[in-house]
Amino acid sequence: MLAFDFGTRRIGVALGESLLGSARPLTTIDAEANEARFAAIDRLIKEWQPTRLVVGLPLSLAGEEHEMSARCRRFARQLEGRFNLPVTLTDERLSSVEAEERLSARGQDWKTRRKTLDAEAAAIILQSYFDAK
Image 1 (cartoon, rainbow, N blue to C red):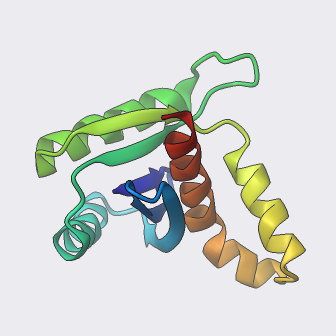
Image 2: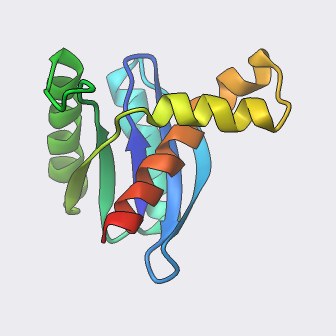
């Protein structure tokens, strides 16, 4: 399984093993150029051959959708259409905050954290997907 923490500048990617119910950060993709973004995702899908994709759905603390929620839904539809894989949207509330706390607790400086934050958030999103099943 691959999971995505979608952003307008970067997309964090995590890899998960559904039998073990575990997730780990994989990489971060530059999200600004649409075709380059999907070419990078295509390479990951060919390499890891997931059977399902998970996309974090940002919601307000009250559980309401907003502009970024609509963008994530569009991204999920694009993934499903391009790669013919089932895509599940899952609540990603506070995943970036938790990722920041984890990386900070490991003693990583801000420059290092910034490079790995989105992939760490994707791993948190995927782990919460597994934990909810």
